[in-house]
Length: 101
Image 1 (spheres, rainbow, N blue to C red):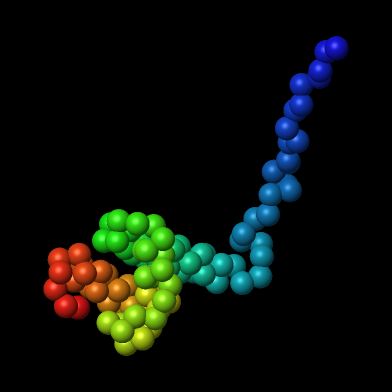
Image 2: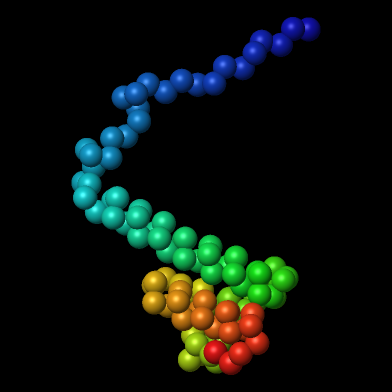
């Protein structure tokens, strides 16, 4: 029994939405950039936490719970801003080097 090859469906260029034709076209790239920056801050901080704790579960737990060294704030929430990320990373570096934050 011969099986016919499956061909991927081809989309025409007209079917691809043009971001310049949508409402709020100037807001979309800014919002995407902000989300990418936030994701980058969270990713870099998560990698540092993994390096410090040397255990993924411990790093996740530390990042997702209120922390006294951060005035009771949750590290991942702080990473939504650049200054918050710096605070979290300062505490992680202090933990890594054994000095109080």
